[in-house]
Image (cartoon, rainbow, N blue to C red):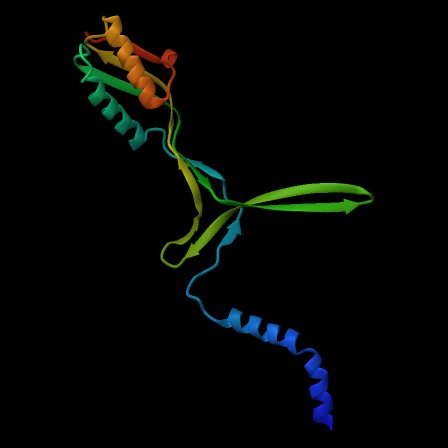
Length: 173
């Protein structure tokens, strides 16, 4: 008699109990991966101002500008406005609190940090922004010809995104 009464009482809670048992079983199963954690790390980091990107762009521009008819020997210098920037993935937590009829909204951002066995902890990178240029100086043999100057300014502006007022072309001695 006792077992029948107990079975009837448990029958009412069989689905919640089944969900609870399955949830506990899933939490105990090892997956071999660690979950993403959050921490308060800086959102961006600045790389060194002199980057491979700047040097590579200067070399490519020099090579291209030497092919312009009348330019002759060419030397290019680019200046950077900002270095390479790495943007990290962040989670935003929004919360609303009501007290005495007044509503207060607040938000907090945390950087997503991955825990990996082989590396340790590292922030999840959202995107990497290339350096931006501040100005360009081109020294060439054919700079005394206005048409050569114009073509050089157009090529440098096209390749770097700089306006013509930020590009200087001077004659090589």
